[in-house]
Length: 220
Image (cartoon, rainbow, N blue to C red):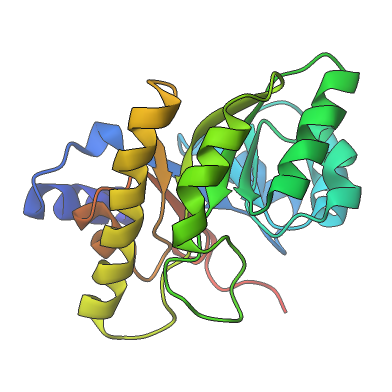
């Protein structure tokens, strides 16, 4: 697969180990068949952006992958999310974290979560401000039903690689500081998508979220 070759090239260029990079196949707007395709080529992590779209697809595909919620999650959808997904990557407020923890407790489950940080500073993006990250890490660390596993960010929507890498470098700095607070389970830095994952790998990403490079253009 071309993707694996490009990951290997990026890792070689930036002195990273390709085995340290987890690929999450983003199946937004693709059918359940795309989930089966990803698994068939050796990708066992699948990402969806909307609870209502993911629910029937996950039911059809079955428990053949680890399912990640990567899109914005409203608190009123938290109950359904903790039942559907193995990982929620888009925790962007204390209010949402409280509700995820409560809902997970109701079904006696611990749910893996990442804090989404807006390191690009773009107003249209979700995610907490970087200067609030450390406090939220400390607060969520006390929740009994959340395993806080790391950070997630979306890169700037620009073509300037220096700007993209600067945002990813900032998130990596926050991640390194967070590990001192949260402990060894805080080991996932989810950043980089189809167009910029090489820059993310250069700046320390351990998880990339890729859709079009695997499946082609998204259906309209």
